[in-house]
Length: 101
Image (cartoon, rainbow, N blue to C red; front, side, top):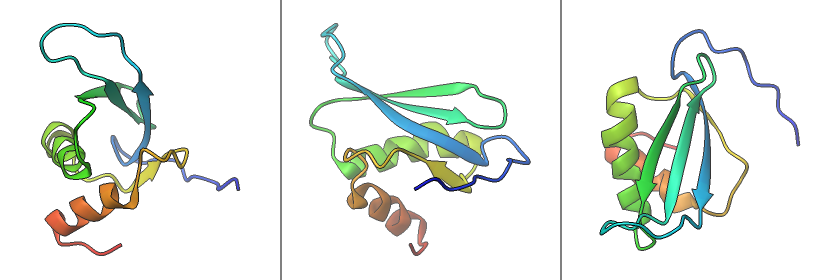
C-alpha cells in the first residue's frame, strides 16, 4: 500500500530507516549490522552500528543516544516493514519516553 508522505518542513522531521546487514568481520567490536537513518529534508545519512546479540531495548537506547538526542524526536519514520523492526523496538522507546502508540 502506497501512502503519500507530506513534505517535511524542518530537519529530521521525517526519517527513512533501513538496515544494512551481513557486514564482513572486522576488528574487536565486529558489528554485524548498520541502522541507516536518512533525513528526508536534507538527505544526510546517519549510521548506527549494532552487534548480532543487541536487543530491541539496546537498539532503542542507541537510537535515543546517538540520533534523537542530537536531532530531536522524529515526527514520522518511513521503513519497509522489515521484520528487523519488531513491535518491541517501537514499544521500548515509547515506554522510555512515556508516550503511547
